[in-house]
Amino acid sequence: MTEGTSRRILLKTAVAVPLAFTFGLLASPIARYLRPTIKPLDLLGPSDQPSPLTDVVFTESDFPDDWTCLSFTFGQSYKEYNPEALEVRKIPGFAVKLPSGDVVAYSRICPHLGCIFNFIKEPQECLKGYNYLPAGPVFACPCHLSVYDIAQGGKVVSGPAPRPPRQFDVKKEGNTIKVVSLEAGGIA
Image (cartoon, rainbow, N blue to C red; front, side, top):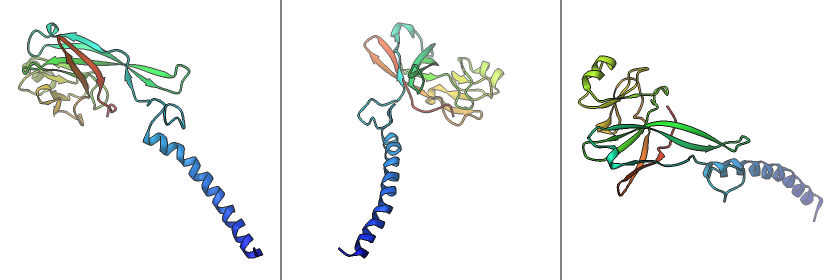
């Protein structure tokens, strides 16, 4: 081996080691992006996605008529980097029986700026308080007057809200109706 060859190998190594170190540092954030976990490099550990504390349970008899609306609070835990290793959020919600017989559930947090909205059963009441006359019962936010049509999947029919409120997953098992999880996303 000549002196030129060994110098070339030395220079290649001097360039390769910092590059390899840099790519090694990028591996953990990329892996956490592809599969989020609570600990760095814990690719086989459980995901740190939010999870419900307990199911919210109703029975069919709780919804005797169409447009019966019941409020509830859904507890959801988020893994956090704090001494308790989690944060619990209590999310207010509404469960509503539609004329089709299905029960749907929505978060009561307005997607515009996070206010808590109301259930308005009478269209005339909505016209007086929210300056909008709906065809049927709606959700309406008192802060900026957003109105959501429940019969159309929570569609925004009036106001500045950018999208419908987040919906809960509802499962029916025999006579019981369970609110089991919340649609992913944030307030806005």
